Picture 1 (cartoon, rainbow, N blue to C red):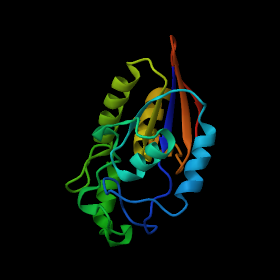
Picture 2 (cartoon, rainbow, N blue to C red):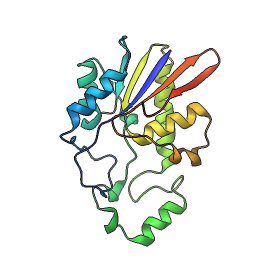
Picture 3 (cartoon, rainbow, N blue to C red):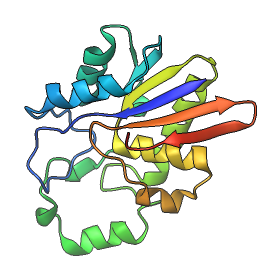
Length: 185
């Protein structure tokens, strides 16, 4: 079974803005970035899942037409009260308190990284249980979580996994388990 994790293309947002659950549109580079992703994917039939946020569902529609399912658990981390605020406007002590234990401490009215990880992996396990070749169009945090899970990387080290906009990670599932075949393709 092949699984392709596809990160949405560049969002239309000012650099330095905190976002996760916000339903952002995509930058004008969407078509060029989406075409590049399309050229990477093998020409086979996939079962397709996507985050319901438009930056993912638009890419899923571009790549696979209307044949995909959305799953709320594939959304990016919920930054709560920090959503759509410039990082520079978040009080430094508040941000430092969160960073000191981002794994377990949720953002104000948001969620922790562990909560994102747990919901992402729960969705991923259900998705791969079908045994079908699968494409998942989602966000950086979800992809990092799945890649950490697949490679037995400790959750606290998963933020070091680089996941770029409009890029693909390829996993292969066989009788021995999950194998990471490539990242940022």
